Amino acid sequence: MSDIGKFVEERLSALKKRPITAATEAGLERSYLRDLIVGKKQTIRADMIEKVAEAIGATPQQLIALQSGEAPARFAEAAVAGRSPVDGKRVLLIIGGGIAAYKCLDLIRRLRERGAAVRPVMTRAAAEFVTPLSVGALAADRVFSELFDREDEQDVGHIRLARETDLIVVAPATADLMAKMAAGLANDLASAILLAAGAPVLIAPAMNPHMWTHPATRRSRETLKSDGIHFIGPNAGEMAESGEAGVGRMAEPLEIVVAAETLLDTTPRPLTGKRIVVTSGPTHEPIDPVRYIANRSSGKQGHAIAAALARLGADVRLVSGPVTIADPAGVTVTHVETARQMKDAAEALLPADAAIFAAAVADWRAATEADEKMKKEGGKGPSSLPLTENPDILAGIGNHQKLRPRLVIGFAAETDKLIEHGTAKLKRKGADYIVANDVSPDSGIGGSGVMGGDRNRITLLSSEGAEEWPEMSKDEVAARLAALVAERLA
Ligand code: PMT
Image (cartoon, rainbow, N blue to C red; front, side):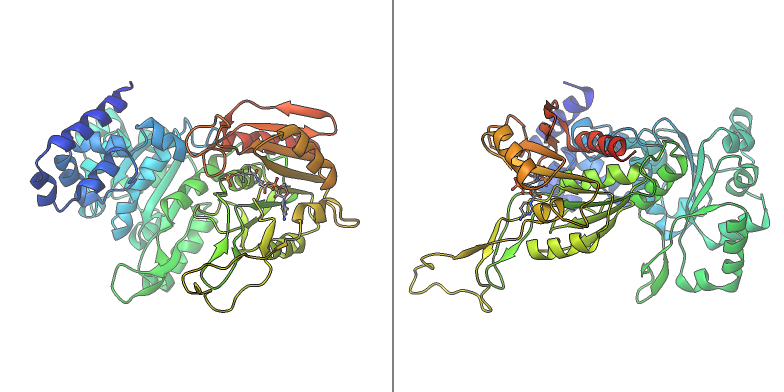
């Protein structure tokens, strides 16, 4: 067992033995703590770290490590597929003094789980919002904050901090910090580093909407943009000040990570200029206002494909059924509920260079949708639910006379005779490839199986025959399929 695995086991057994009062005194439910230990809860409020650590008998550093991606099983799942462009890169994170500084804890975790080394610099004001202890523990590095700290200057120095990095991220970038950058001031460590920077600089502004729209901030923005500084956000939404809303919320940590990845990404983008339509997730077919026919598809496979294609530069149009996972970064998403809506949305996106149909579209829907909730009659359910067939989206597009994309890839979810049934679909639906996957409970794929789970083992069917791929994560399947698409569209 890995060290972290041992640590998790020990904490779980310590929690069982621990008097309930130790946790409840800190206002923490046992079930919450158990979830934290096994990594189900991913964020802990900065001001709670010490209390939570105490309640599970761990040090703050151990707790943060547990939550930060060093607990492999859970967080490896959450990590992005393949190598992130920030993997192996040095990111200097300058944390400004604003309420959004707490989000930096999550930002550090997400950068590190993608393989980046994060070196934190905090302004004095930042330390009023988030503790250097939490920042340092999460970054696994010391926190730099003083320009005139003799030790820091002798050891590293602000010029080295500015130079020995691949990317500088400023988050939150306050109005004050932006003004200093625009004016070229260097009267504290953060501004001195920014003035000496050689690496690209990405800033995530966060401030009250009035400050954001103030002419002084506008001038700073214009100057910084023309100086080549990259921006992410701010977003619109509610402010920490009650009753205030507008543009000024800091971008979410994942948005900042994606912006950082985009800046550091040097991979070739062979799909630039290609439009690709992808369907993903289940469809919900209503029976009455409260009931529907559905299936277990999570959208993980289809969304991973959309993300992988976008990473190769494609203009990806994803049509997603109802799922609980996030929209993939860099992809334009249309959300639909039913098969008919999915068909209309997919067809409206044509012409396209390629189309990939990963959605688990319901083959049937209720013949009539009741306007009112169907009632039990005298305790008996309805004797039958008449069904009618849904349109086949893949077959419609795969056999389309005028608008068929150059490359059409369908899926086949089978519980038996994978190759036979998959090959029949290849021909009937007019696809160039069918990605056949075994969705039976005895497929040998652990966890929740192929549908809903994180792994897949596929057989790629085409006119050239069947090619078996080994079991891999859905992200890896997606990356390999995206490479195939790039090769075919080249
Ligand atoms: O979403 P996940 O939890 O990640 O699971 C992924 C998956 C198992 C759903 C995915 O890998 C998969 O197999 N998707 C296709 C599921 C399916 O509906 O298979 P099918 O054999 O019934 O359909 C064959 C093909 O026709 C599919 O490409 C499907 O999108 C398409 N189809 C089917 C019916 C219909 N009315 N319209 C369609 O376009």
